[in-house]
Amino acid sequence: MATSARARLRRLPETVPRIVLGAAGALVLGVACGLVVDLSAVVGSPGYLFGAGLLLGVGLYGSTYAIDLRALRADLTGVVAAVTLGVVLKAALIAGTMVLVFDRPEYLVLGIAVAQIDPLSVAALDRSGRMSQRARSLLKAWASFDDPMTVLLTLYLAGYAYAAAGHKGTPELTAGGAGGYAAGLVLNAGLLAGVLLLWWVGRRVSSRVPDTPPSRRVKDTATVLLVVAMLVLAAFQQLMLAVALAGLVVRAKVLDKVLGRAVGGAFLAAFLALGLLLAHGVELWRGFVLGVAAFGAQAVVALCLMPLFVRGLWRGDRIALGLGQQNGITAVLIALTLERDFPGTAATVGPAVITVNVLHGTSQVLLAHPPRLRWPCSRGELTAGGERHPPYDRQTKDERSVA
Image (cartoon, rainbow, N blue to C red; front, side, top):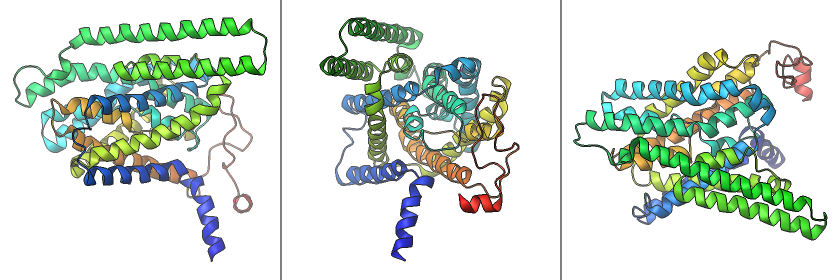
């Protein structure tokens, strides 16, 4: 009996990754801390926003760092469609659902808060799921570059929602307007240019130095310091576009060793921060509807819009992308930003994040153990992207028992 229990425990991470169990524990710990100690002054403070921005930066960098650049170039049209038309369509579907169910026009902003896919969650759960490398790269790029469009939608829709709610004047969020957004793009470009220049100079200098253990240690240390400095600066000014683009270029073996742990730690810290947010009150029903709407909107966009721009995706990849909605620290950041002008946003987005992640986790379990699912091609057949399908297609009963 004890041996059987231990065997089940060892098999558990194959279905439910250990990091998901850790995230659940961090969430409970965060809620407990928020209930025991009054942290209302912390949530929404500059320090909290900086910490959340740092976690988001780690997730963005880890997500784009792991993208297969060849796959990204091959599906660039699909990525552009996902982060433009896809985000707009998702936001419209989510916001329309919230306004239709609750008849409150200010709920338009809730569609913006959860329309994006959280890059930290995608990076942390990279090893789970049943997607090909091509589909993984597409989802990572989608998650990494949909934020700028989300910011644009926030600027344009927040003013309308603010007026529709009966408020006079303009919301604090849009005080900078298009000028503030343009200034942000300039700062992102400046940070990216500085990082790439230092990266290029460092590579040129290191190529002229003899390859010895001390020189390699110096090079590795300089690389890590460069990335850490970039993440800190980006967190101060929320310059996440520069971080995402840098992940496509600034790559080194030393980062391979530390980035996985950094992403995992940031993922756990993000759920701890989410727990602190949930401790200050939740709107369970509104959050549940918002989460279901976000998860459903991703399925509609992935299954109906993406096939028009991305050709040759295997059916299993299309389904996995349709179930790929994940929310986390990005949605929390947007909710905290909107909370100033739309009180109650954070209380709704918090449970929505939990709902989305529960739906995502459940769908991944079902994908991992499909009931008598027969894939449309044989074991050795190649996908359109040149990759072999997973080995669970058309397995016989005897083959599955051996596996």
